Every structure is written in structure tokens, then in C-alpha cells.
Length: 297
Image 1 (cartoon, one colour):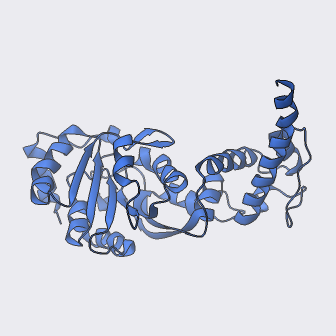
Image 2 (tube, one colour):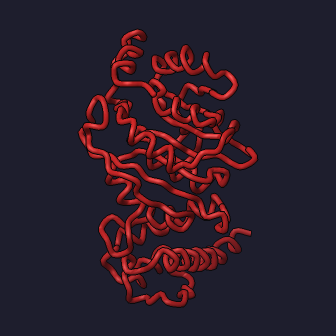
Image 3 (cartoon, helix red, strand yellow):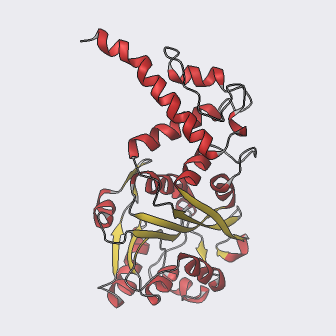
């Protein structure tokens, strides 16, 4: 794996300085990089998506463990470095996509999505993610790409708090519900700024998310679930009855799920109860809309 001296040399050769605007903080602690790789439990030939590979330090570790890597790099200068090094050394197992990993906040870059689609065995995301892309990328992969079997990433510590948050805590919210219903999320390690060069202004953390294959992926439903729960959490200290009815449109009664009391608050519910409530609200909203649909016929 690349040392800090080697990273500096590669950047100097390319006439490139780390860009704060793109969140270019290079992880230089090899022990932590190996901890992330160990958590991913990669098999030889397994497909990995890496977003924001930088100069390729983590990428080298992925290739050393036999993975096939699709790397997506937005920075043209770093892309050139990667083509001249890893691209030349591993032409059969390293594919570089130059551009943003996302077409928009809820859609993957078309070229990346095409390369990942319908791959036997699926793929894993293993990356030191740029902070600005972390949440939208992870939620998109969870809800729209069932081939993503797991994510093993370095992101802001406060985002890990939200993804792994427990009911009743301040960190618990809409993305906690989606993340934990679709799979199992856990914190791997906390990373102080000294683990990076240049040092970021925030604390980072490594986390793992492993998909639950028993939960079907219906992209349209997961978008609705996120929207419904996000709206409910905007009234987290209010009793559920009023905001739930407002979301449903007020035109149909909600069939309250077993174990969910209309006088409870959203932050008091378990993940499973929240999903059941969101489904009940969604059904009531459909019934509320039905007469208006008929009027237009």
C-alpha cells in the first residue's frame, strides 16, 4: 500500500494538490485500511465498487486481495494518476470511470450502474467516501441496487451515528429506518483526523452494512418509506395520529398496525413498527386519492 511519501510523490508528479472542495483527505493509516478490508471479507474475483479512490491506496489493497475493482473518480488529475499506475498494472481487474458516481441524489451514474447491473454474486462498496457523496450514494445503493450485498466505508462519524442510531435517540431518523430494515449496520472503528492527510476538520468512522437478502427491494416503495418517515420525524415529539393523518391526506382512516399506538411518538417505535406504519399510511393515502382519480375519468 502507498505510504504518505508515495502519495505526495504521485500528486507532485501530476502537479496536483488535494482539493478541499472534493473532500480529498487521503487515509494513510495502513492498519485501519486493513481493518476495513478484513470487514469486507472479499473473495478472489469478487466485484467491488470504489468511489473516490484518490491515488489508489485502498485500491491497491483491494487488488492485492484478488478483487475486481470498478473505481469512480471525479477528479481528472487523480484519474490520470490511476490510469498510469493501477490501470497499467491491472488492466484485467481495474476499471476506471471518470466522473461523478451519481447522476443526481437518487440515481447512479449511468455508466457505473450499467457495469454493476446483473453481475452474478452482486458487488460490494468498499471506499473512503468523499463526505458530500456518502449519504446519497449509500441510500441509492441500498434502495435501488439489490446487487449491492454490502458496504464497507469510511465516512463522517455523525453520519455513522445516524445510520446505526437506536430508537429513542437524537441520531435516529428516516435513514436509520431504511438502513436497518434493509440490512445490518455496525460501526467498525472511529478515526481521528490524524489518520488522514490532509487532516479533515471532522471526525470520521468506518462502518459496515450487510444486506438482508430476505427483504425484497422495491425502489418505488423505499422512496415512499423514506419520504413518509422523514415527514413523521419532523414532528418527532408529537403524537403520531395527527401527522400520520396529514400524510395520508385526511380522506381515509389508517389501519393502525398491531403494536403501534396513535398516541405514541415516532421516536418511540421500533424499526419494524415504523415500516408497518409507513405501509399503512401509504395504503390510506392511496384510498384517499381514489375518489379524485375517479372524478377525472
